[in-house]
Image (tube, rainbow, N blue to C red; front, side):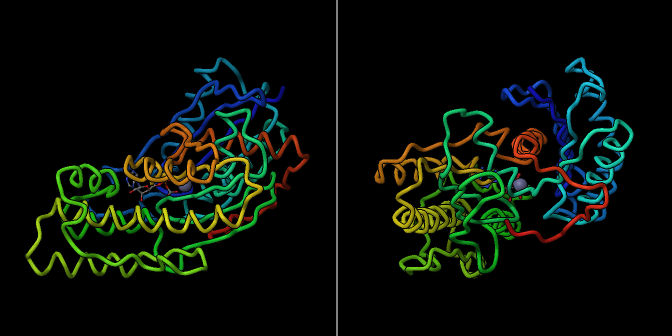
Length: 330
Ligand code: KG4
Ligand code: ZN
């Protein structure tokens, strides 16, 4: 049994967790920064980095206290080393390096995307490689065949905006505030998903890539026309995203008969309409549908700790000289 401390600071969540190789989450804490970024309608990198500096060490102390352990009991320190907003990534990584050095423990530099990709295995011990993963967050929109630790085949990525980014930008232009995803979903519940004719970029194309920039512009034009209510715009936008995700997932599932399951992760996986549509696609292909609990879908330290546990078990640790990376494809 190994015990891992995981640190996450790549966007606007400061998070730490203690997770062991038996899949027990001993403690986890996430501190959001919504209040700091709300006046700007989105995440301001400099403000995010400063907030991580203020919060990360107290959060680490909290999880150690809650779990009743000290650094001496930890087997490795796992920290997100990218991709993400570089100032924030550096705060988490250098904190991880300092703790690893001070306590004489190995450092595991975790790719944030690998954290999301492996997170379903933390709560589902039966989930076997390979599985198809749809990773839909504010920064990413990818379909990956997860073949093993450090072993991924990327089937699709976005050619412009990520799905969560599209939700956030749509929320901003509809005056729904930040963070956008939950606000759009809430308002969409009172609207007609067929009320506004919007494009479904790339739907029907044989390459399973994503594109959301054109959809967002179409919402902006429809909003500017003054002919539609905000709930109808929100509901129609959400339906268009659902249709794009479903269509692209269908192509990927058809291309990966070896996948043991279909898994969805990332903050956008919190969306009820998206979850239920994807459940239907998986069922049509006879694959189990796995969606980690919501707290594990959005950015958190437990997924980084778990990826650290999987990497440590595979003998993958990193030197203290490792650099933070703003871009780092899996
Ligand atoms: O995974 P995450 O916490 O951070 C990134 O790594 O990006 O995802 C955050 C994204 C944001 O774009 C947010 O608007 C979106 O997930 N999101 C949602 C919902 N909840 C969060 N999008 C649609 N519907 C939701 N209910
Ligand atoms: Zn994320």
